[in-house]
Image (cartoon, rainbow, N blue to C red):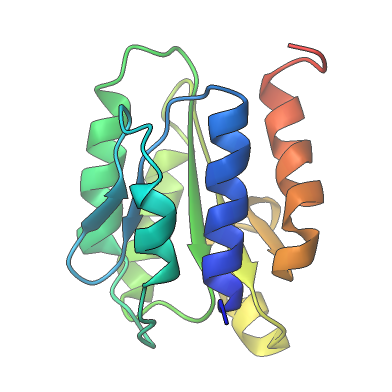
Length: 157
């Protein structure tokens, strides 16, 4: 059975594929790329389904290279979603990155907390910014993610 984070990743990956939006998916702890921008094979979903979760993962060793790869892309608008199901092991570094990233023109990010622990949710809101966290269960993710996409892409496009 897939865990909430795996369900969320697969839902987002399928939506981005359907919309033909270039995207990359990486897992924390080791910066393992599960889906690269030009990969259209079914392999990423299998890799996501096989993920083994770890608690208190360090976020920055994966987030920084993801950000750099995204900024090197030619698209004018760049969006980074940080999906997580618990607290980061490097909260001070994540908070500093989030403050700086808010100032990058054409770059937008959201954290997506897939869980039901109010303390963890509040902590992530404090790290990323109150307006930069989507909190929900995987079954609700398509609705919340749809709202994020509509903010950058008109309906029907």
